[in-house]
Length: 180
Image 1 (spheres, one colour):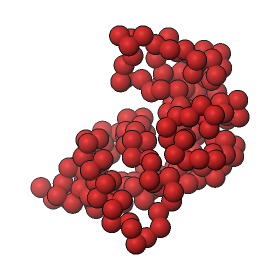
Image 2 (image 1 turned 180 degrees about the horizontal axis):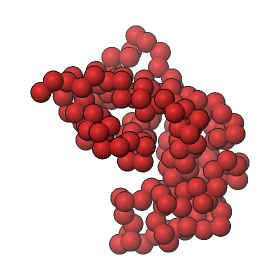
Image 3 (image 1 turned 90 degrees about the vertical axis):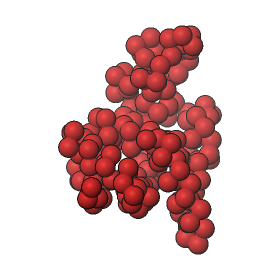
Image 4 (image 1 turned 45 degrees about the horizontal axis):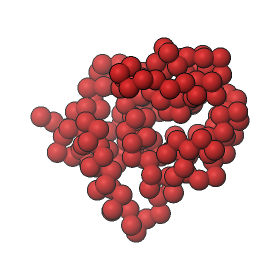
């Protein structure tokens, strides 16, 4: 599914040449996919998941992604604008590339180590975000089942945002289900 969404993103990004999307859209593909996956896994029930899957796999999948993408862009904008949620980023490209200077973990105050513990490998769990980021896992232990520390922080920030925006999943799901 992530490869399909990445292709949809390429199509939409090329078609946006006449419009002015937010700067972060130039660099966000993997994070957008991961964010949708996070919301899909942790905030949707099985019927909602089926609706998203059906919409993205349909012949109108690009249009479905376009609508979902608009909601994701909105939540990213709100999160980037909220200084209590994430620190102010100077360079969006460096943010999406997990640049340590850009992230300044000491300035992340709303998300705590306990907020991300369920998203990171058990060997990474620690007393502070900085300590957690400093732990390196051997390659044989690393797993796609867990998030890296930066995305785990972002995911916890998403969770906090969704707790305040109860309609987000409904808006995300406003994509019509294609008839089979």
